[in-house]
Length: 238
Image (tube, rainbow, N blue to C red; front, side, top):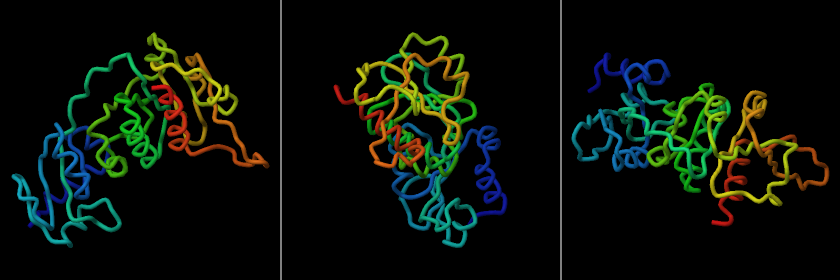
């Protein structure tokens, strides 16, 4: 049975300031939790209605799970893991950079895309949603265990890098006709405003996904959808 104090301590991890203060985050669902258990992430506690037969687990009722879950329809388990030390950022390979992505679902999907396309490093501006937000963790479906996420002063980083910097823009060069390198940084901008002006100034190559619809009525693509198309093109010649 969970105490009131345990419930309070778990629920506070739904807020970024307490995740940073405690250096802990929540993961929900059997599949997601097992991905973290099979990685280098350190388990702190596991609350479950069905036993995993592991150390640190606490069997609870469905009613108790509802009190701590972030989901409208809770799964059978919720775990608390330690936030690991961020690995050193290595300025090589294909790197994805995010300029103020705010939607947790978008970030979670983008982390999954990085995992799928073998992009091991994801760089986020300080304005981008926290990757340990419960909704982000849920949306990654475990890919967060295989992608290193860095929060940096994005403008400063881009000014220092020796890699070519590609940005996704509506008026960029047609990506299907571009000669894309194996190493470089691809920037995706904010859902509503795109790439900000300070970050745009750091871009060496603007690329775009052309529209083929007859009416040309769609204003833009969802940022995660655009990321999938662009990453696919970067990997085409691999």
